[in-house]
Image 1 (spheres, rainbow, N blue to C red):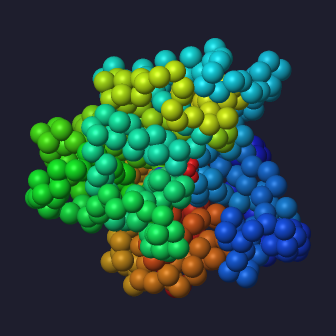
Image 2 (cartoon, rainbow, N blue to C red):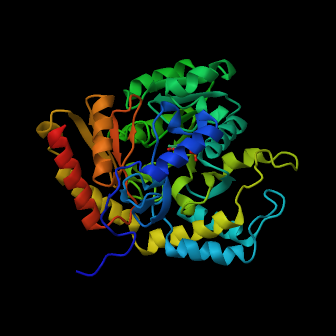
Length: 428
Ligand SMILES: Cc1ncc(COP(=O)(O)O)c(C=O)c1O
């Protein structure tokens, strides 16, 4: 059989990870980097990535992995896609940094046009952001400017980022508690998937709520698809009450759930849509797509009212245009939908067949295996690592093991991953 290209290969682990080189680098990092920005605070070394391509990652000790994290959902078109690399090289010959909000550059214009074309919102405008959290901040500010109402209804669980504004709408107490004294008293929270009547009652009793913010499918906090019809009902409620519907598609956007945007699966048109992650193929970017009339509320004076030095930087715009082209040309959202069907048929009996499995759920290439405890989830993640599978455990209590590979994962790689997980579940 012909040797598979780097990117499409099956994993091969020769040195038990983290290997000696990774341990050395982690010791150095722990000596120099503040503990809040890495996971070394728990006292154990982690992997250190050296190289990646497609669905493969190689660590500094030479082990080859299959990435079931897609680098936090960023590598939809795969790591270091050749056309992304080419776009970076070409753009680097011309312009790496522009003048943010003051002077534009042609690719920013092109990307704004392309995002508006793709948007599930009629006649939208785009507001570029420096990251996903920054996009959430922009959406919250847009809603306040447009409605004058400071209240926001969000759900539990939800992850919207950790900057001061986005943290207030993120649910996990572990992230929130130390900073609570800086919070404003305007966020209301209900359970994700709660009865629509509960939402209606809250909006009725709190007229100060100007926006409902939700993930169409909970990502990092447990991979939970919204119950059937829920989004549509919320959208109707928001329309009737003149409340802005903000969807956070930072994780779900650009094909992960089998549609360009997960909201489209419910036939819902949000008022504001936050995106980021996969958009620029590995370079930082964020954006809010929104109804033009809401975006008009930013028109006041001649200062840019929310911006950042590196916003819409030329390299990110160049790669984003390529990523959108690759997603479209290679029909990757459709491929995610097809592979999602395959995962459904492989995993639908797991919760009955394997004692520690509480639930297996997902859409497209965003799947979660909920286990009976954090310890079991950790054991599965560690077992997967010995098979060369990179996976994260998430959810509020760390019990949900995530299977979110790049959308270019090969049939063979996916089958290998599912076979390995099944073998491990049998012995947990
Ligand atoms: C749904 C969602 N919203 C917001 C964010 C925050 O994005 P960023 O980390 O780019 O600030 C994330 C990141 O994981 C996310 O998954």
